[in-house]
Length: 119
Length: 113
Image (cartoon, rainbow over all chains, first blue to last red; front, side, top):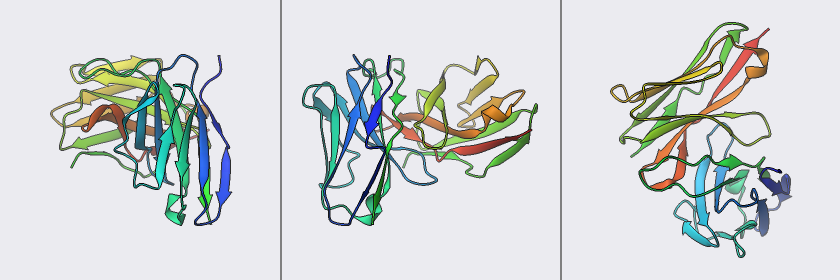
């Protein structure tokens, strides 16, 4: 089966523009995560979906960032009024079931990422 | 605040030798630590998970240890091969929620033929 896919692979935009980044998780995976990775850094958590709802969006840096997952599968990360500091690789991951507090971690499968460059 | 740290210097190692990477954590006690491999232009790929009550875990040529006293995990690649060249990331359960991972900066490993 296919892994996590993300489109576009690269996005170049101008400061102030609006962008949408798409993530197709592995079929059947109920949990979906967005991370952001800057050069020379590890991925940084942004938001986590369980099904259609955002179960944890506390990693979103500000209100310019928003994500949706209307049918519990594909997710879109939306960034308004982009700034140069938003330039990074945006990674999406999915897992079969969400981890339960105190229980065994469920492996997250990552996509290749979308490289966003804001000029 | 919670920190998970890796020495971000690149590790150059001769083929056949053992590469050892260190991951330190401070100000929290994760229930598990994980190690990922990341190649350029790709997302991280899960390698190993070790729980706090496990001292050591192995997978093929990989070995991970977890020392809760030292607050440290060591990641070993034995009999290293050029194909092992990549960045290796340490990650743990974030203290703010079990559903989010906190990553270290990663260590680049270069295996020289």
